[in-house]
Amino acid sequence: MTVGAVVLVALAVFAWGVVSTRLERLNLTAPMVFVAVGVLLALAFDVDRHAEGVAVLTEATLVWVLFSDASRVGPRELRRDAGVYGRLLGLALPVTVVAGTVLAWWLLDLPDLWLALLVGAALAPTDAALGAVVITHPAVPARIRRILNVESGVNDGIVTPVVVIALAGAASGAPLLTALLQLAGGALIGVAAGAVGGRLLRTAGESFAGPAVLALALLAYAGSVAAHANGFVAAFAAGLAFGHVAGRGGPREVFYVEQTAGLASLLVWTAFGAIAVPLLPSRWTWAMLLYALLSLTVIRMAPVALSLIGAHFGRRTVLFVGWFGPRGLASIVFALLAIEELGPSADAAVAVIVLTVLISVIAHGLTAGPLAARYGSPPAPAPASASASPESGPAPAARLGAHYLKQP
View (cartoon, rainbow, N blue to C red):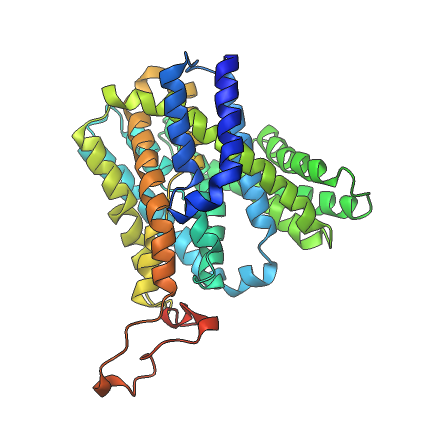
């Protein structure tokens, strides 16, 4: 990267820190802005499209995001909504992968069924960071925010073995057992790393605790990968364990990880705009565009609605949870893995993944704020004949949005 490119990126990061609050009021999110910065970078400078550091940066960013998100989730909340997580991760996620695979095989005319599985699996996990406004908006009930956050933190680790199987083109049933062992191994290694690291840091000084936690997240990931287990599940499990045992200093230490992950994510979105987006004009097709739109709507929302039948959620809540399944860092990581493993033969699959993520960046970025506010607003006054209904009339301010959610 040239000095001019470094200056442009540094200036963009500084400018975002100055004006981000005002831009977010206009529904302009960080991924939207920095993808645009990346495209500008590609137009102004000679960008190395095969930079090895991009894959490393992207994976490290995802690890830090998973770790920090998980550390904010308490075990009590996990237990209370275990049934909902089981529905979303045990039913909706597999159905999404299968539906995405079938549609990719039928619509995209891919040369290999395994490439269709790669597309279906790579575009199944969600990224809460793309709809960060939803996760932090006070009008959205805390329970819904937590459900979306935990779902996005776990689902990419679950589908990683499926992506690996698709890349390997395995034909026997043995890889399924391997995938389950990888998930279990990653969870065990992550819990051990997070718990031991959290205990040790409780007895240490605070002067270097933040960078130590940053390293702890990478250690859980790298150790799991070295043991042929699932590194992303390990990062999330390490965050859960660390948040449980870290004590009073934990939130401050995790805040350092969040800040670092925030900066790294800006660089990832810039690289995405500079390297991946310029490839689309010569490779996209109408079939890819149709697939991307269906992936972000029907393929995500229908399985979510199916899985939440009987979970006592209102229709608006089901639609809200279904729509906010943005595709982001995890899908980019899987696309990079495909490029590394398959080379040019994966171009069509990578192109549809890139196109879907790009549309998600724009669509979910623009709708996060307005829909979060609309979700939390009280319903219109009911007709006089229905005034006796317990659901009519505005809800108290402290419970905005909660009337759309029937607690089980």
